[in-house]
Amino acid sequence: MRASSQPPCAPINLLVATVCLVAAGCRGLLLPTGSALMAGAGAGAAAAPSAQRDPPAAVRTLSVELLFIRHDEHDPAITTDLWTLVDEQALDRELSTRLTANGLRVGILSGPLPPTLAERLATAAATTDAAAADDAVSRRVLRLLPGKRAEIVASAGIPELVVLEHGAEGVRGGTYRDCTSQLTARAWPGPDGRVRIEVVPELKHGPLQRTWIGEEGMFRLETGQARLRFEQLAIDSLLPHRGMLVIGGRDAPSATVGDALVRDRDATAGMQLILLRPLGPGVDPVFATDDPEDATLREAVPYKP
Image (cartoon, rainbow, N blue to C red):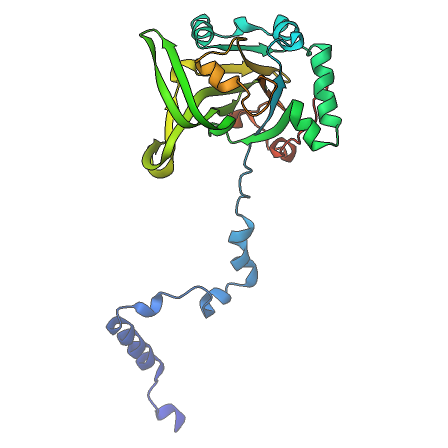
């Protein structure tokens, strides 16, 4: 009977708790991660979001083999035999005319190399003497992100260079000091396995300076030499699997863009031939599958005729 005479306290406690929450601005309802309420949901429920996360997308790169072949100006294997197999008509006619006027000879090689040149490449790839290999052939592999530029240095440390550019408006140019002649290369995969490669001749010269560079809708501060870019000589080619982009020059020394690019000033060979070859078929991400093998980088292999 005594216990029943006491008033019930549960409603009073509930009312007090409600008043406290209202006075505190309901801050007590915002529970941090890892609180007792979250733990009460069970360990399996807490781990569920991380288990459902998508795996990070694999970065797809294009492996492009770069070859520099040093040769004499009158080497018949380069100046005659090779160019009978190179398709110079694969480029736009107007572009070919501009390249010729500026001392460049460019085409696409889809078939096998001439036997003498193939033997030279195979010997350079198999030799264990790095110094001997560097005398004839230099080889490296470029890992290119689609659409991202990479610099291919042809000749560096040139004290003084006269370059004349022949265009539709006439001849222009000048004398440049502390020069580096190079190509900037970009590549894109195609839906049919071919690889699109764009190369543009460039000339860096003069002292180091800081400039703002506009790229992809943004500006960034870059420290480097002044850059002269020959846009009218941009080479845009679509290469089949195991096809090669061949870039060479004319025989006679001159003050052309091509001579600045392919004249070998570091050796007694005279000139150099530049070859670009995709090491695998390109796969456009739009047409790519989810097969893990599709995202694996293809390893570089020595040239096999």
